[in-house]
Length: 292
Image 1 (cartoon, rainbow, N blue to C red):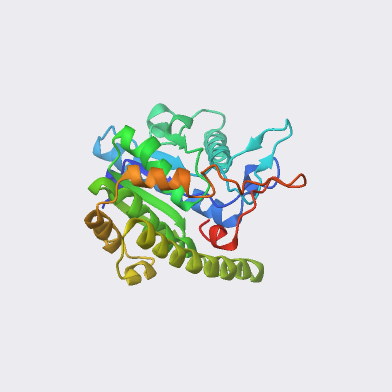
Image 2 (cartoon, rainbow, N blue to C red; image 1 turned 90 degrees about the vertical axis):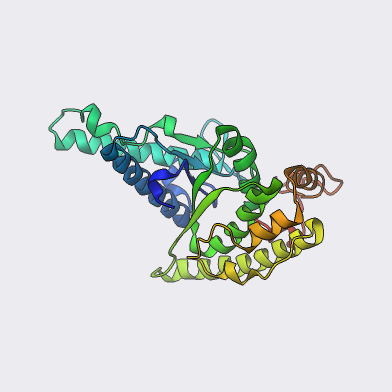
């Protein structure tokens, strides 16, 4: 799918900012945001040249996670992951305007130059999801379906991409719907030692989480397939096995909604919602944590 036809560029979250500066987000999240920022301007510049008036949206996913609190700002408000991402992108927008103004010796860029630039109205935050399944579910039900989006470009880190593809193809194939979704995994090679160790840990977690997701869709929704296609991070086949088998199994959004809000411990109300006086974490078992 050519990028200039996408309705929305979608960026998955991956952690909270550590201080008042949104640039304190995890480095791999910043790389996702930087890539989305560049893709957005490339698309808009191409559309401007072709005389097209359609601008894509840039959608930032994730409220946070249940096993790690979000950053609390200086006035006591928690800052969700998608909000942190939006603040970071707005900061980049301001820096671009400032740089252009300086280059033009105090003159603001003209309307034609700014026509392809990212604005606050182009950024949409998804503020309900707490894991990758929620990312896909709330993206579809809150934004994609009401807005009529059918062409999406999803950006995450390469170590997170196989599970992201599996989850998104499952959710977006419910009710036998057909979407045109492409995926981009930001490379995690060529890192310093600390980052390499972090990637190894996350990659192991992702492999376990992917297997847990396969078991989930088989046991709960009757979806089964050979999952080898998801091991290729660069495979952008939009009618892959997960989507095909999900449609064939007749999985509905209604059934996913029922499971999500009655069985998934991040979203349902349950007796195990024990909140310690010394932490905000909901106590969850290791199997549940692997779905994040």
